[in-house]
Image (tube, rainbow, N blue to C red; front, side, top):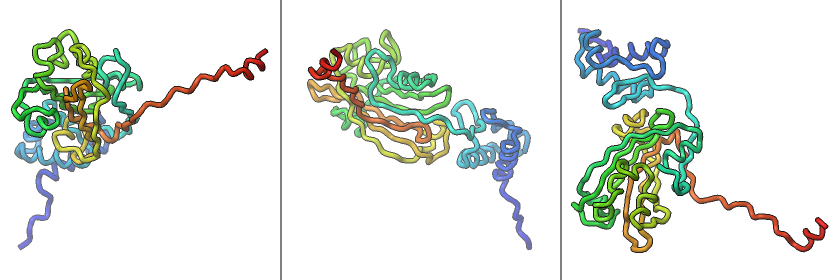
Length: 268
């Protein structure tokens, strides 16, 4: 008795979509059929469509955009961006200033909510687990393409009741941690950063438009008040590895030529 050796339905759907992408029928950036459209066209369940898209996402052909659908992923390389931990005062959003300086149009989405610090965040901030914090989530884009994620936590004991309590709202929205803290009398120093390389989680990959386990740089950043030693902000930053290089330190300015007696005599 022979067994059916044909591939399962989700692989057949994936192959149909793959052929349309590779033939150019679906171009980079095109919106792919929704799960309901796949169900109507093929008669298969929505689960089959979900598994088919999971295959194409893992292959790097398709990008899942939460709340928007699935899109054909561009295969062309994007220019490498350079991240530096500080920018000049008065530049506004540090990430936006870095991108703008590299000729890239910056944009971002953010959402702030009050929360309770879990044990991990409490240890980084030097507060008790359960203490109130302001939690802000970010998705940063370069020319419309997502390149960086961030999760930030600030103790409400530091910013609560001030005009800078909401990082992305109010009269001082979007100017960055250092400048916001300066407005309430805290001159933060250079942040402490711990950087590791790892693979993107599936939720991170979906937000960044890449494949799960794609290389990312993960940064644990904490700003401190040098006067008291207390932490005033900590953040988890995820940088798309194919788009970013990190650069630390500041190159010294060339020394001005000295006006020696010999040089003056030569000029005479």
